[in-house]
Length: 272
Image: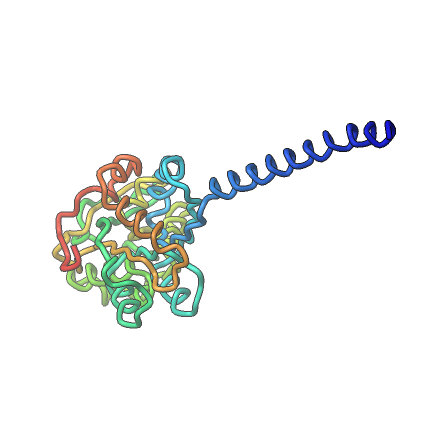
């Protein structure tokens, strides 16, 4: 009998300890689950790279999300979404691609908002002798090659073509045009001296110390440059996506981006 009592005295504390341990583990797992961040994929025009990266750290600090950026030309991103690529938010560098996705019901229409705008600038290499102050002053005879985004898929290329057409320069310059997959590739062509001049967004030009801006395109020479954003129809995290869209339109986003991209637009589209 004494042996039985002694055995019980040894076993009971172990059982209690085990229950307590399981309870603690359960609590830890629940806490970990509650603190888990929601992955949020933002497919955005590559010209927004620096602004988005600058605001990423602060936004993640204040919200339980893990921002993942898929950055490329707007046409490429739109086609990816059409083909079922995962994305929670799409931000285009022009309205045409957003219109296409809205028509196909690939975005949620009532989440569509205009985020920001931009400007087209003509650039050349930092050490280049080419020196003019207006696009109208371009002398095609002095240009061997000019880099622009592909007008069929890159909004910046489309705006550039419109600018050159309205400046009566497209016909003489088009044989010398080198088409790029996006504005960052245009920037690279000019930085490395592979082309004499190039046309990019002002936002892209300002991140490089290897080029100089020669001139800014008159906004009357091309369609308004507006960056619309929207939550995708297939988003698995619509609540968090809508919250990020709201944030992008805030003064806080403009401050955290540290960029001209998130300044107030001078021209407002029907979606604003």
